Structure formats: C-alpha cells, structure tokens
Length: 141
Image (cartoon, rainbow, N blue to C red; front, side, top):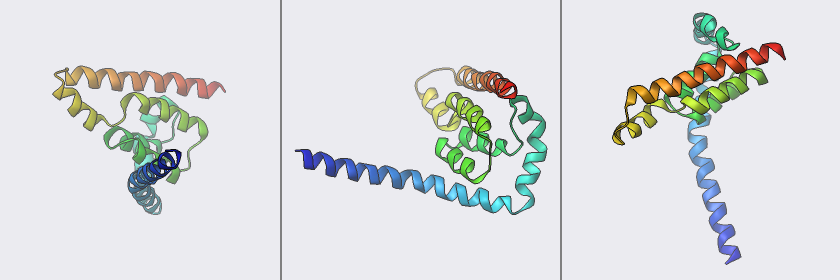
C-alpha cells in the first residue's frame, strides 16, 4: 500500500512537472530571445509610465500581460527571464493573485451566469489597488 502511494505520487509529480515545463520553458526562451532584440526595450519604454504607478519597471508589463491573459506559469517563465527586483516580484505576485488567467476564468464565470463585466472589474480593480499599495510600501522600504 505504501509503495503504491509512493509510485502514484512520483508519477503524478512527474506529470505535473512536465505540464508546467511545457509552459514555463517556452515562455522563458521567447522572453530571453526578445531581450536580445529591441522589443523588450520598446515595451519597457512604452509601459514605464503605467508601471511606475506600482513602482515596477517597464519590463514588468510583460509579466503582467502573460499572467493576466495566459496563466501564472507563463508569468513565472517571464519573471525568470527578466531580471526583476524581489520587491517587483512581490508586487506582481499579489496583483496576479487577483487577476491571473482572465480569459479562461472569465469564460468559466460566464458559464456560471455571473456578470463577466463585474467579475473582471473586481479582479482587475483589486489587482490595481493592491499593486499601488504594495508598490508604495516597497518605495518606503
């Protein structure tokens, strides 16, 4: 019985690792590749004013977009590829805890009969408010 539990646990652990790696590794390589082109620099320049509200660098916009529109694992891959400060990672983590995977979870919400507009407004609103608060705390520390 114990041996079967170990086997099952190992099998499920490997399957989960493979599932996560299929998202994280490609995102990591794409973002790393883009860092060697003008694309990331352009994104950072364009989004710096907006990201400064949260005390984040412009590059953090890439992580937020991936986390909001794809999933948290894509955001993790981007975080690994982009050199962000620990405080930036903390701000992003809290923001994405409210607003991750918007497309998929909004579809689920719609099937449940809940107002999509209200759910998106609440989730994004909480992400913005928490990002501002934690970003400001980070400025003090």
